[in-house]
Amino acid sequence: MQLRAGMTVADVGTGVGCMLPFLAAAVGPTCRLIAEDNFPDSLEQARARAAKNGLTNVDFVLGAETDPKLPAGKVDAVLVLDTYHLKGVEAAGFKLAWQRAHIPGSQYIACFTKSR
Image (tube, rainbow, N blue to C red):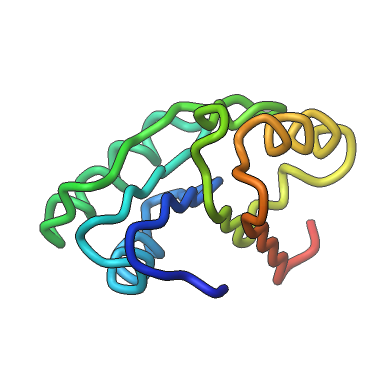
């Protein structure tokens, strides 16, 4: 990903927030991170990880399988890492949500390392 200071980056399917410290380091303290997951218990663990790492620039969003509920027109980059539930039928709704949320010229990175 080509991240730079001040970007708004969404970690869709953040799970327990493993990538949040790395994303924060890449875009600096003026960035905005959006940690999205559709499981409340995962978001609570991500919130705890962010607090432990002193991250105060993270918004936590409870999404849905077909809509990550990202803020419209606010996202510079989206990371979807090993979020296999977005494959198939759910992907169509997610693509619509992405089109609504992205800023022209923004990045979308998806990586699936396991098949289910």
